[in-house]
Length: 400
Image (tube, rainbow, N blue to C red):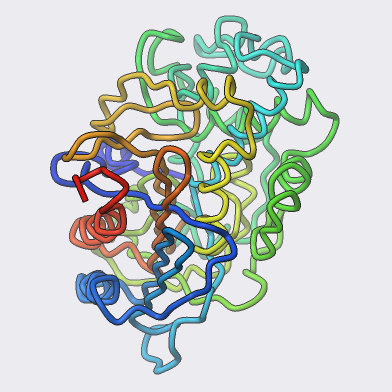
């Protein structure tokens, strides 16, 4: 989840030159080809910026390119796993928003429903009031609901991680923690990235369907698209299957959080192996495990109109200003302007030790996804964005 307010403003790291980079798409059946050209050079640059391990995949026109750099663990010669799994952090939000919009399309709920209608009495206290907040505002981050991330010890300090990495949270408990703070603003009167919004969205999904958020994501998206390496691990702290270790640098001293969108560890302290983590603190907001290949397939299907009806996809991609990000934000998607004209959609993801970027062009014809196994800092972020920008070349975005 999160750290300091300053770091939360960089949740998608989309400002200045960074705006020129995020997604590319392709056919799920494309044959993989190991890259030895520009993609590999970009992955090498990401590794050289301080990341322990890097894996990227770019797909377009029935072709899929992959590239790796670094190792699966510090002080090891073990290579990065092929199609390794990792915690995708806030890219989970796109999955959650998709399920909500599917329910809207089925007529089972409305984006204008209040939180109170589905979760009576849950959002109350310190000026927070679910009677004045709509489901749309949750998905859009315009609810004003405070972020629970800074209240999760496992995400904010090395000591907290060691003490609480196996702790299980319930969604209701997370919301109660968030309600100890007043709202950031009155609902609809501002924009502020808050993981609590998507914890609440997961609770709404449960209230509408009678099934868990994880169960609905699995049935409606994972099985439908045959995303064999995507899962919601629940309280299980390990990553099943091939995976690299994740590392976080917690700050020294008092241990204020340094996380971005879902807990990072890109501070200046000692690097800690954070591969084991009970991710129940990120239900709906950042708990999923996936691979770059599955993420590319998901974003291609989503932007290609295979998961949502046109009306709901239009709702998802209709954006509002998000000053903290520097780019517009829709419902679980950021819209990234291309410097050559046009735009594309995607989301940054991070959950303690793993950082990812993924997304797709309009229509889902090109996708790109990349992840690293440590925070790496601003240089790493910019190099990741550049890689995605390179993958986006073509499709008329830059006149090619």
